Length: 180
Image 1 (cartoon, one colour):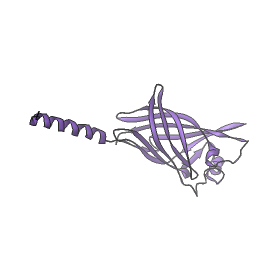
Image 2 (tube, helix red, strand yellow):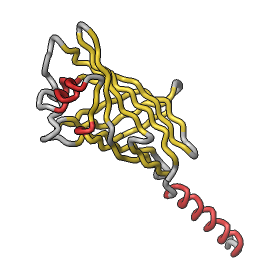
Image 3 (cartoon, helix red, strand yellow):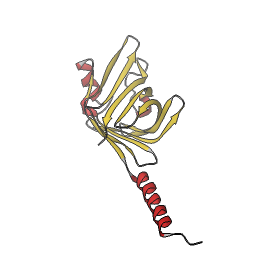
């Protein structure tokens, strides 16, 4: 049975709108102004907090999946102690001269009953390891993310002070980015 021109036009319009919505990208630009990556390192007699003053990246959705990419400027590291900040920049920790950037690139963001699970690859000191962490995420005009999780610094070759400094480092991430 031949279709009328109106039916064909309507089918074509629906197909174009469907494809268009899959290709329409939501994008949020990440910067140090809207994204905080902070850490807590612990040892037997206390702990230290810090973070990074410079980073760039984006959060995007191609219509089928969300993706997060962040480049962290490791020389911008800071801590609650000026002497420690200098030590963190040295070869004992972040080796900023040889590794001026760290990177996170998501591979999957999945919604669950209690929020989201973000999986991806974290590169520190030139070593890339898969990490997965829980996150609270909201999207719309803004993209917000809150996450707290731990990584093992020794997985990336940071072994200075083993036995005196805990290998597990707590990471806190807060994002509040506007759609670009």
